[in-house]
Length: 131
Image (cartoon, rainbow, N blue to C red; front, side):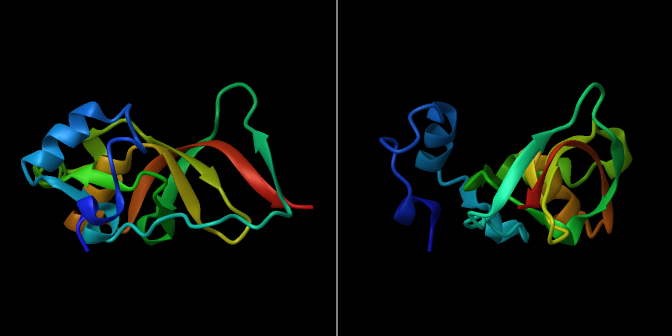
């Protein structure tokens, strides 16, 4: 399934640049780079934002899920040629089941998967907990 099979510009008008890339055939589902989609959160989870400076730590790349449906393939491939430690930390939310949902850094995370990195530096912007 290609990105165009399940997305339309009407659904995501703020991704104008991405639609131009899709027209060029360079927009790919995040799953193509090993980043599964977040899926539905259980209704019994509540959200708490981090206060002050969000904590940073190394998180397992295989526990990251994407909220963004697509990435620009050429950008991910270009980033994958740069060693991972040379980027700003990605921003994520922590889930009680051990996964992390990307707020900012989908392309960097996909590149880390492509490079075979085991961890990536992340800023924990918030966390979900069961209630």
